[in-house]
Image (cartoon, rainbow, N blue to C red; front, side, top):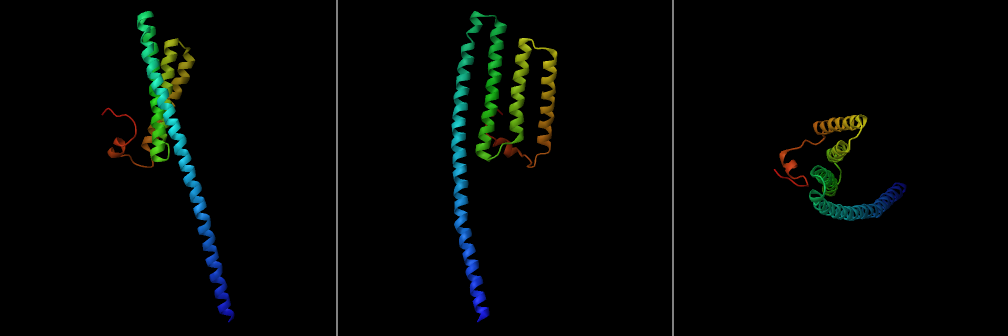
Length: 175
């Protein structure tokens, strides 16, 4: 009888622990689903904000074209060029945001691409405003470092990229 009592007690203990596990698991699963839904909602708002900013930037760039009539052509084209490069940086941020929405993670190459575009915009705007040589040296060093990081990120990527993966990346493609 002692053995039967011990066996019944073990069965009750095991069944109680399984009940507790199943009771806890839906709670954790619900929290994860709420987290994912909240993140997607906030990223949707961020995407909408980026798109509105991009549209406003395009309108501003078109409005800067009127400088061609009132100012020097060189000054007007500088404004248009810097505005256009800034819009390209915003497009890279949008591309990174959309990649996170689709993949659930941000690729290092997308971040580096975004920073590279922003830094190149800064170099060009400094060039037009006549920056000091040490500013160009610092920006050049940053650009070289980012370029090397980009090469390393692509070369030693944990997932090999194939031609189908490249064609399925979010963003604009003109190829």
